[in-house]
View 1 (cartoon, rainbow over the protein chains, first blue to last red):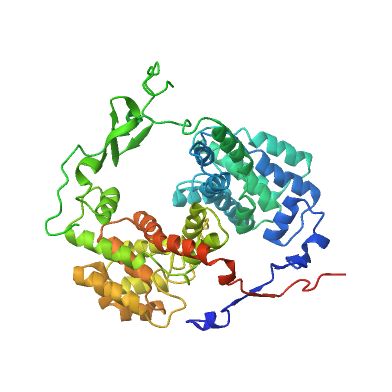
View 2 (view 1 turned 90 degrees about the horizontal axis):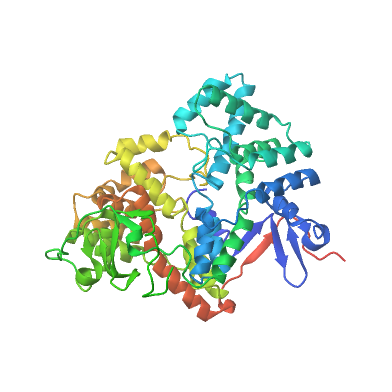
Length: 273
Length: 275
């Protein structure tokens, strides 16, 4: 519907299939009574139910929780963590610092930007393979068109210490036999054979596993939102406990200047305040 | 690290940040305190202070040069036009949600930024509209072709576009303020993109199927000022914050009893508590 017609009927009210709080009585979460029907659910179970409307078996929940655990690094140098730490050092609140750090995690070269592109890549690669496409040329076309492959290569390192442990857990849980994960390995092999030195990183492994678990790109992107959260809080806490302002101090000569030499400000003729 | 006035560290730290924008000279007694700060070569506190305005500083920061009088005037005009989208607008509404509950000031502004970042009247839409300017320029046919045959979108963190950037999907005609902003910008520079947009508004609106929005006027002004789409996106976020801040504070004072909670029609699940 064009124009304000789409708005008139929604003034002052919201329609929802997702839920509501009946204050003083009960709460509904995706059609279920939160306390009566979902009160025994683990938080990750509820979180996934909220995103997908589906419940996941225990083994899958275990693996999915490990997605977050294995990339929770309390290292204040990492860009998003650094925001939480700087917030602590500058004596901001923990909630603000960590919220901003999570917002940063939606980056184009790491985090959520990679996650959603990687699972989309594997879903399309699988569809192409099922349609009879030759994988090697298909991947090269992707690489040419997008100049990178989400989940292959790593911005600041060549190896990825998280890949081994998550694959080990997936195998132990019987969740490492899906077609998308197999495809992810096959793509890595084709890239290495083409001497492109783009090894599969943690993002590729997780996205492939998630595709095998039936996630859509948008569901997976939302699921990964708190992936780095556990590592951020220690960064904030440590910086908060140290003397204020002592994290990453930068002296004036710690910023290399690359710009114009000093010049005199001239008030624009006929303008300005 | 020694205390102020104490011994210097054994080795100077590496210059691990780089900037074309900013240079600071240290005070003689403290390398962490700036004696002077230069923005693209201009002495902020020694020279610009008292002689330059807000628009001068904003333009200088992003473009690296002082604006001409007409550029400063256009930026001032836009700053006034964008400063407060008003409490009906989603980003300001979000900030008011922070105010009403007593959230930190930064949380209200973060809420306004998050909600105002999107592709419906937000900064992402400004970015997309400026990209469209770069592709289509002042060629109505190119705009028509862009909308008739849109390039496939790649999956990413941003939801897919649901209407042509710069147009109001819920509008009937371009609102009076949109036309007033275009009039103002066109008056400053009749050869500008904004003036072209004003002159070609009927044809563009017919092709887009929607009336022009304030985003289109802002995007045209940013193009005229020489900003990139990424710079326009940032500036749009920044320039709409004053209203969000003021309304968040106002709502804090008004309290929750004078803030709508809305009726909710639940379409799935128990409306009554089970016995």
